[in-house]
Amino acid sequence: SQTIHQWPATLVQPVGSPLSLECTVEGTSNPNLYWYRQAAGRGLQLLFYSVGIGQISSEVPQNLSASRPQDRQFILSSKKLLLSDSGFYLCAWGTGNSPLHFGNGTRLTVT
Amino acid sequence: EDKVVQSPLSLVVHEGDTVTLNCSYEVTNFRSLLWYKQEKKAPTFLFMLTSSGIEKKSGRLSSILDKKELSSILNITATQTGDSAIYLCAVEAVDDMRFGAGTRLTVKP
Image 1 (cartoon, rainbow over the protein chains, first blue to last red):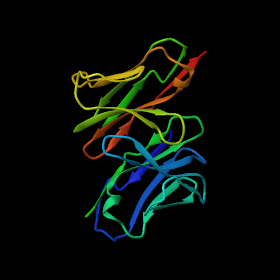
Image 2 (cartoon, each protein chain N blue to C red):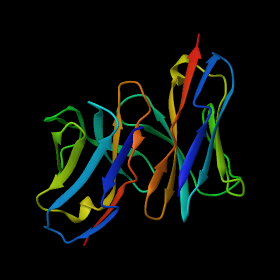
Image 3 (cartoon, chains in turn brown, yellow):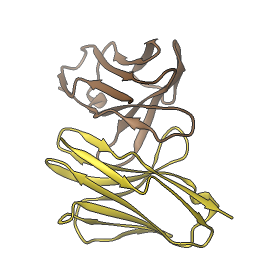
């Protein structure tokens, strides 16, 4: 069966520090991978999606970047965090028309 | 372990029918329950429910939370073909968020 792992679950980082959130998927090949940001109690904002290794599409220009070094690995990064980067980040995978499968999320607090 | 279960997994109806989608959960430190409509890459937010027994409505869609039964329903009346989508239920806890597997709704003309 397919599983998705996202870590860390919580993270507190100072302003200006780098960020690396990792997401891996098991049990499926060539999935579409997504990074979302969850606004408090509301909608999901799509940040990045990837349809294959090295293929990254950015939906919202910002202080973040994403990379897909392997088929089932998706990384969300920042060189210098801003206070406004605080939030809840979700990784997800999907294949075409199937329901998205989400990780458990990372709550990032930038201090 | 925290979990969210949606039912049915798929549903096929005809235009004009009324449908009820179910979501049940077992979550520690519950904060809110959210419904989304997934059509493209970013699921569209529908409702956020935090209080039991208060119905939220938006056009033909409505939803209610039952904290005693740890469940929620999403109703769609007078369905249209444009309602065809995957409907996701998510439960937000203090430190994480859990999604159900989704209900695939198909509305036939």
